[in-house]
Image (cartoon, rainbow, N blue to C red; front, side):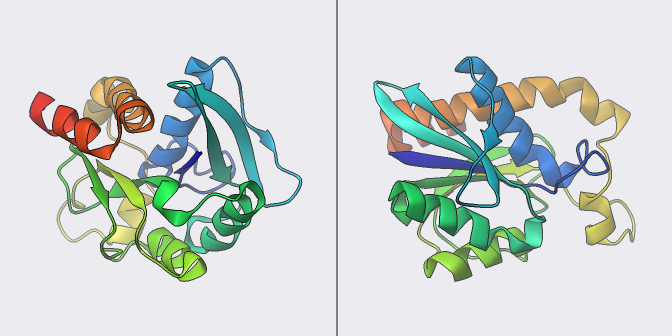
Amino acid sequence: MFAVIGLGNPGPRYEATRHNIGQHVVHLLARRAGTSLSAHKQSNTHAATILAGGDRALLGISNGFMNVSGGPVSSLMNYFKIEPENLIVIHDELDLPYGTLKLKRGGGSGGHNGLKDITKALGTPDYLRLRFGIGRPPGRQNPADFVMSDFSNAEQKTLDNLIDEAADAVEDVLIHGLEKATLRLHTQR
């Protein structure tokens, strides 16, 4: 069983921000499966199980803030007995141009505090990541302010299509595995 976790911050203030893109992808995956996320009794998350390629997968988002995602994610994984190698984390990525999607296993956090906290809580960085490029902040804007801002009007014109592509990539991993999904994602673009 895989766990698919979309990173973000709680509440309406952060809903449309760049930092919450992972949550948007998870909500789309739930809608595609004909379900929605609901509060999980054993962790500070909202979760749902879906079928993907004949196997169950767990979708989840933390109810807490991005920088403390590790506790809720590890709690949910422990409850469902899911190993870190079967975790897919969807997150915003400053170091990729807007609209770039990349799959990878493991690696550093690249300064992403949500990833840092998940790695610390799991005791390993060896989990899958779907990196959703949001680009670098313009001028001298503080990166923290940039990730907490809404997508620009120009970005919003393509955002729904990119969220669809990101959900497609996750479904490919669940159904066909990382290697085939990576090949398909990286050669399509």
